[in-house]
Each structure stands twice: as structure tokens, then as C-alpha cells.
Length: 136
Image (tube, rainbow, N blue to C red):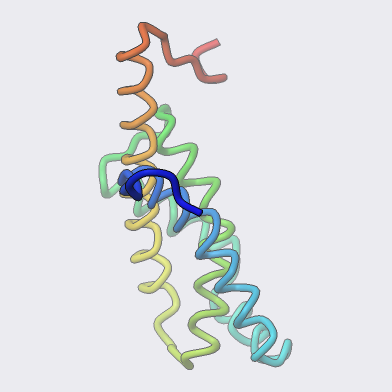
């Protein structure tokens, strides 16, 4: 079944898994347990537009500038983190959605720092140059 020793996951691999698998699976599981009216009520209390303003504020306060790849990744994660926050808070009956969302944005910064760091390291080891659409 397994050949050789089990390989430990790198921090970037764990970050990718948490970012892409854990959040989506959590939303899917909770979606089946909660009535849509409850979700609508939570969405009225903490709108997506306001969540994006909060995301920009968190990124600015943490020193992530809007001309960096980490900013772009975190800002694009804000949508899925918003949904995760709404469903999680509705499921647990939390009332502090804005603070929960801020917490998740801080985690997103950590995830994306790990991922970008690993990509830069890979490029350096293989004599490659990182290119992003912002650089073109």
C-alpha cells in the first residue's frame, strides 16, 4: 500500500489542504444541518460587502500591501472565508461574525505566506524566476 516511509507534509502542503479542502468540506457539511432562513439572517447581519472592507482592513493592519501576491491570494480567499464564517457562526450560534472573520483572514495570511515562501524556495533551488500576472 505505502512504499517506503510516510512523508511528512510541509507547512505549505498543510496550508493548501486547509485552504482548499477543509474550508470547503466544512461549509458543505454544515450546509446540510442549517435552515436557509438562518443563513439569510446571518448574511443580513454581516454582509459580503462589509466583509470585503474588513478583509482589506485586516490585510492593511497586518502589513500586507495591495501590490503583493499574498494580498491577492488573501483577498481572493476572503469570499470562501466569508461563507465559512457565516456557516460556522450559524451552526455554533455565534454572534461575533466580524471578529471570527478577522481571525480567519489572519489565518489566511499565514497560509498564503507559507505557500508563497515554498514557491519562492522552489524557484531559487531550480534557478527559476517567479512570474505573476502583476509583474507583466
